[in-house]
Image 1 (spheres, rainbow, N blue to C red):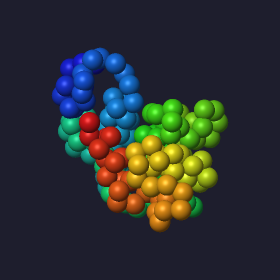
Image 2 (cartoon, helix red, strand yellow; image 1 turned 135 degrees about the horizontal axis):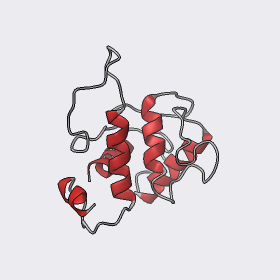
Image 3 (cartoon, rainbow, N blue to C red; image 1 turned 60 degrees about the vertical axis):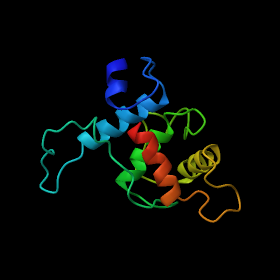
Image 4 (spheres, rainbow, N blue to C red; image 1 turned 135 degrees about the vertical axis):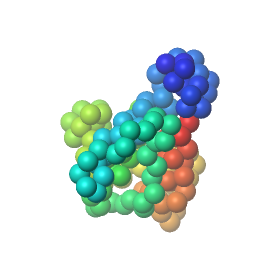
Length: 139
């Protein structure tokens, strides 16, 4: 585990399976299971070295494959976990941006000082929030 963390710039590389390591593995495994437009798996590459980045804005009511990745990443941290059981909980994520995702995104934005209640974009995954999510994914 320490070697994986070193190879993926997760510091300190202590061999602890914490939120940064979990997020890195989740993002990498999610990108490795995506199919190309032809329906075939992507060419064999080191997906661990190139995690899936959040490139699209995401907001309440939207259904998108990035929402699934967003939920998986948010679920790696107890402070931003969507739910502890049932729909939205770890291993029960969906591609729908509903009220659980909205609340978790707001907690994420507050935790990382990106936005707060009353701010424009609060609860929306726009440029600042995507940048912070992508930082977590590439550590």
